[in-house]
Structure formats: structure tokens, C-alpha cells
Length: 164
Picture 1 (cartoon, rainbow, N blue to C red):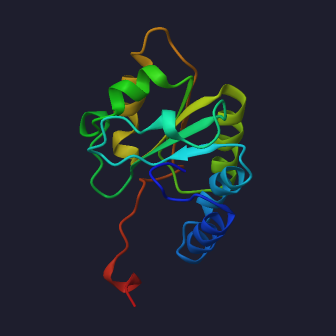
Picture 2 (tube, rainbow, N blue to C red):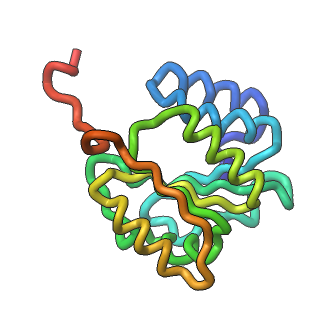
């Protein structure tokens, strides 16, 4: 992972445990191949111009960049400083606008390892079209896969009854 998040197996083991216990078990599907040295993962912030992809892990190792635009205040690509550069960098894009299913993230990791550079965009269903249009405007075109929620919106903000 980039930006000093995990540097060794112990760091990854802690991240995996934290992901599992905090309700983000789907991320384990990205962390395990990263821990094995099969995949580099970067999670930029909205104000990041471009993640430091050239400094990540093993040279020549596939890279997956995960944009987290599903935080109840999605901005679409216009809210991400790195969106334009990532659009030209990526060899494959996955717009994920549904609930976090581990199988989806395992497939994203596999796709990244197949194509070398994958942009995984976690977004709200309300911003999925914006992201898909933004990515499809790229020339030359790259493969784009969208995962949409069935029968509703994503994310669903928990109600007061969900707070303990």
C-alpha cells in the first residue's frame, strides 16, 4: 500500500484484522494479495493530485487505485484532484456503486493483476453515471465495468435506531 500505510507482513496483518472487525471485510480481498507482494494498492484522498505510484512496493507489480467516493457526500470525478490523471493512467476501470461484497473486491484484485493498472471507483449510486461518463470519455477507450445496486440506492445512511 502506498503512503506508508503498510510496509511489512505485520502491518498488513493488523490492517486485515482491523478491516474484518470494523465492518470492512471486503477490503481484505485487496489486502491479502498486497501482503503477498502480488498487488500494490493506493487509496488517495480527494485533494491528492496523483498517488505516488512510482514509489509503491515492487517495481512492475500490478497497481490498484481505490477512490472512495461513497462517503454520503459523493462528489463524482470533479471532486477528486487525481481523477484526470488516473483516467489516463488506468488500463481498466471498475465503477462500484453497490454494497461492498467481498467477491466484487476479489474480482477487482484479479482484474488488476491481469491488466496491471486498475482504477476501482467506490461511489454512491447517485454518482455512478458521472463516473462512467467521465471514464468513457477517455481516448483511447479502456474497458469499463459497472456494478450497480439492485433495487435501491447506495449507500444507505443508517437511521438513529442503528446507533447503539
